Amino acid sequence: QVQLVQSGAEVKKPGSSVKVSCKASRGTINNYAISWVRQAPGQGLEWMGGIIPIFGTPKYAQKFQGRVTLTADKSTNTAYMELTSLRSDDTAIYYCARDRYGGNPPNAFDIWGQGTMVNVSS
Amino acid sequence: SYVLTQPPSVSVAPRQTARITCGGNNIGSKSVHWYQQKPGQAPVLVVYDNSDRPSGIPERFSGSNSGNTATLTISRVEAGDEADYYCQVWDTTSDPPYVFGAGTTVTVL
Image: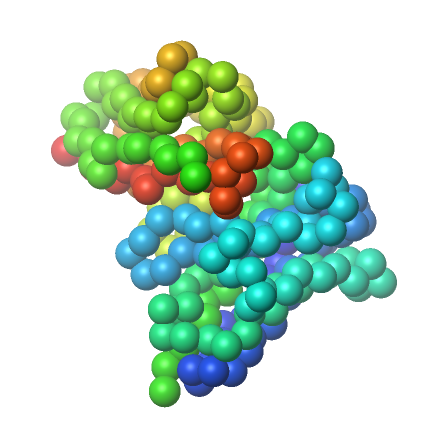
């Protein structure tokens, strides 16, 4: 069973950027449709974007368009999510998650990373 | 955007049945997935494609979907089932296209 292992917690200043990694323990990251989902304290799950095969290029939620960039490094089997111009309301746990059908068609998320806490505070 | 509506909370006695609804416009035409999230943990997929269970998920968890309502049913509820539950669909016309409900907290009395 593949595991997704994320990087550790981050503390950031408003206006700065954060880059969170998500490493697959086996298989090839490029063969997985990896999405990023965040959860603010006490709140629900919010899809930010994903590398979804049917779209060809990374797909982003409109809310995060222009501030988030998703990439994947085949050589290290790692996916990355970079969020810029951080605000206090970006304080959340960020999860990477794998689509069980490889995103073709898009389906459920069967494997999740352990989550990365990002705290944005002055 | 497509909206999924869940009740904020459901309370159930041990060994009874909990039913968590997820409402959406013609949701019966979509595949609905359900996640369980316990405090401090990542979500876990418990039902996919309306009624299928991943390996390792007890048969006590079942799902159905018809019309404008999908339902996750937990039979013979145990204390360990206390958690937040989220429904999710894919809607190609929505932004974001992966849509989550707001979540339902299940409390075992």
